[in-house]
Length: 315
Image 1 (tube, helix red, strand yellow):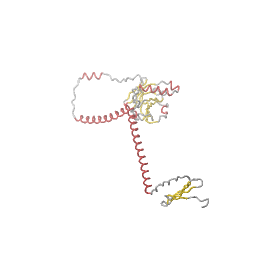
Image 2 (image 1 turned 45 degrees about the horizontal axis):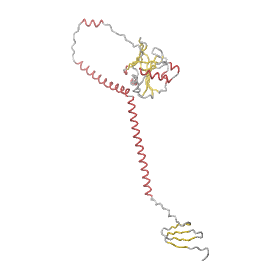
Image 3 (image 1 turned 180 degrees about the horizontal axis):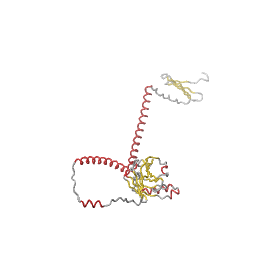
Image 4 (image 1 turned 60 degrees about the vertical axis):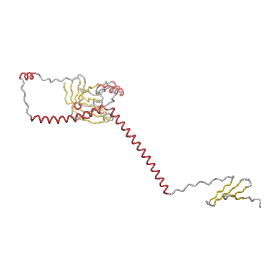
């Protein structure tokens, strides 16, 4: 045997074992059944065979993809369903809260609507009763001639008593409101925040004559503003005086009293503008009255403007 030869031994499981000069045991494992072999040169430990992943068929892969897509769609549906529930609950809370805060104004609107329906029914009943009464004969009672002569001697009282304060009367919506004047000092100083505070404080006692605009006895634009709705906890008694202002129509009469003079206006225009459109406060060459309030009722998104032209003045 030559000097370079090495001893080789065979063991169970197809293992060839030999010892090198350095004393390291080398093994060669042969597995004929699985048609593979692992050659490990080094210490007396052989790594295990790496695990093989099972080969998936095309049907199994499609099924898994469908299940994944289904789970994803179900998840999206649940998210949308929960979002819709939260949205409608939030919307319901906002609507209930809105009407709770503005219940006085909307109660006035509802009351006016119901009264309008009842008045129509009463007018129909009166017309029917009149037709029926005309068919029946009425007996005229005799009266004392002295009584008739005494009645004729009573003079007709045509004198109208004017209020001493400034007032606004709108027959269409059955409103008789005091008009409060706001000092113009903060307007002159251009202190807008203080001016707004003065106006809000004055609105507790009626509607407000906008400072810097004309008075009824002057040529120009007399601007009056009032609440259509306000917070129910506010102590003022005039929080919804203009809630029905949108029912005023072109051709209606509006009356103001100032310095014990009566000014009768006729509505010539009604419009809705943005809060930034302050041209409605500009002075005009004629005598006119401009009424302003927030709209829709319960919001301050826009302004409802009613413009009326002076047609008569009584002293």
